[in-house]
Image 1 (cartoon, helix red, strand yellow):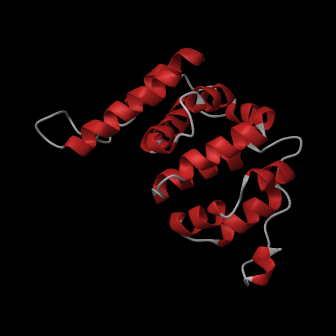
Image 2 (spheres, one colour):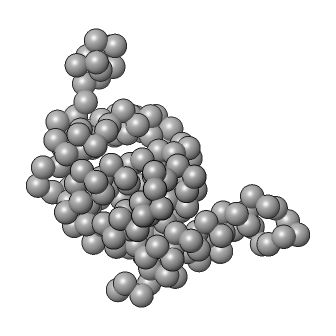
Length: 169
């Protein structure tokens, strides 16, 4: 209702409409801003029975590319709390590298966690070991500290947090 009054497009009613809305936007930033409009109740309405694994993967990648502070964790928290079974099923289609994206999203916004058990609950829903989040946080910390303290992540070292996920297969 608020979206209709503000002139913003209405929120999608299902996964197909969400996919269509995301495809209308050209940049990762625009897509991330649209995803930020959605809350847990909206996700529960859109995904009452199932969530498309490719759509879930696309949302993860968009949020990583956009680098929107707090949005990756918020998305994963909302999905894990409001659509746990649908999220677990969609996550089963993620590759180890894509699970690494989820771990990096959680690690990047660790300070925004509502409580200490939040990562464990989200990781359980995603099939991502909490150790992968810790490893991703360590790598992100090394990148922030800069040269001389630890090697900053590069194209060849970025997938390292995923190694913890490889044991899932």
